[in-house]
Amino acid sequence: MVEAPDPFGYRDAMNMIAPGKGNAGVEISHTAAPSKRPIVITGARGWQAQFANAVEDMRETAQLWRLAWTLSWLDIRLRYRGSLLGPFWLTLSTAVMIGAMGFLYARLFHTDLHVYLPFLSTSLVLWSALSGLTGDGCTCFTQSESMLRAMRMPLCLHAARVVIRNFLIFLHNTPVIIVVFWLMHTVPSLAALTMVPALMLWMADAFFVCLLLGVICARFRDIPPIIGSIIQIAFYVSPVIWSPAILAHRGIGTVLITWNPFFALLDIIRGPLLGGSFTPSSWGVALGYSAILIMVSMVIFSRARARVTYWV
Amino acid sequence: MARLDIENVSIAFPLYHGESRSLKKTVFSAASGRLGQDRKQRLVVEALRNISFSLRSGDRLGFIGSNGAGKTTLLRTMAGIYEPVCGAITIDGAVTALLDPGQGMNFEMTGRENIRLRGLFNGFNESQIKQLQADVAAFAGLDQFLELPVRTYSSGMVVRLGFAMATAVKPQILLMDEWILAGDAAFLDKARHRLETMVRGAEILVLSSHSADIIMQWCNRVIWMDNGQIRADGTPEEVLAAYLPPEQFATVKGAPIPAA
Image 1 (tube, helix red, strand yellow):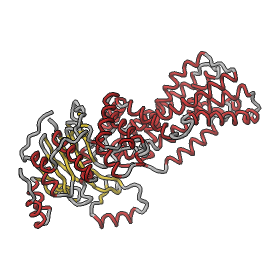
Image 2 (image 1 turned 180 degrees about the vertical axis):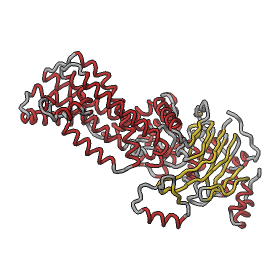
Image 3 (image 1 turned 120 degrees about the vertical axis):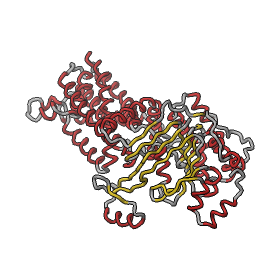
Image 4 (image 1 turned 180 degrees about the horizontal axis):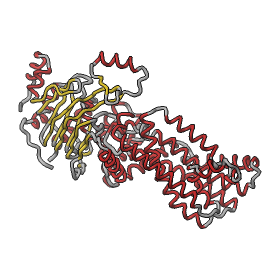
């Protein structure tokens, strides 16, 4: 470290204030790693500069992935601190809901339980991940207000935290699907291997949804309830608890199924898991909507990134 | 060689969430005359207007000014928290900002978890985090309280933990708000010593304070903030002479400052 020149003799003045009498544990042992190059923060006006800043923000977030992971994990631990089952309450409540709904709706829809229960369990686990994510995404910046105001930190970190937290919740729910499949003798098709890219697409979409909703909701406080209502309506009009086969021969089916982004996203995971084949049409719709989402999200996030700290 | 340049920086806070816009407008303009409207005719508070200065290694800058003059906003801007509406900030060197006791702590998490998060934020590996936890624990003297959520702490304990965490990493550029100098006497003695080590190690110090004594003792340059603008910039003697009422300045000047 460079020795600072001391033209005004402040050091002597310092020593006068408090003569350091070797207090234990007082010495500072860590030195912050000096940044390799100067950080320049400008009131960026041009969209190119704003876009570059947004990309840089994501790069910094990637470097802090351990922090994002720990924050997410602590979030879950915190929610269930002091409870006996801990995060396995998630598993249990999902199991109870699927069990209760499964028997009732199998009757209502006149469906065989061996077909309906595996369908319902995958649908509900995926849907609860989706709705939990959009709900948390709305508050990803407003919830981290104290952190945003305390230190310079990449904003995408808060979106990543929400994505990882919801992914961990999703993982806690997956045992329900496995048990249902085992009990009902459901065998996924070989196409279920596409689940890996499908989950990656889900993660990417989740991240960009959080950025988009987080920014918009930080600015307009009326948006979170609106998003909540939209997701609730989408739950009933999309084939989540009812099978898409019911609408197969009706005109309305083309809108609710073919062009429904929620259906496409569900179908790319659910279809092959339930023994269906690879469906290029669902993948096409899912990828198309994702591309639009990522573009819109990047544009809005780049434009608003510097302002979010003022809005929260 | 640390460096901190502020060029023509302006900060404006938008007022979005006021239903009674006109009432707010009247009240605020009567209070400070600092309300403006930006390009899109939105109501904004102009917290900082066209601030420029630059700091090099060895600079010890103090901010003085009345409440709401923009001192804390300027510190936050220098720490890179608020991005300016226009202008540029160049930061060359590791920055630590001691701005408020909470320091972005999560009050639901335990002290130990908060320290861990701070370590991860600084990019520490596991053994460094262990060391940081031991270091902070020894200094803050919180012992078994470290295993309890921070919300159960007294406000003094929060200050101690915040201070210990913020000062556990040695910066090149140190930004301090004056809260840091509050605390119980026994801790204050220990804190001062630690702070001095830190200030001595830091190449650039920026301090915001209402206390003329502290400014005189610690700084070699003073900026007087007024209504979001720089009113005066110079040596502590010059600026304080203009800022303080004459009799008060005489008292401060009379205080024993051996080196000045």
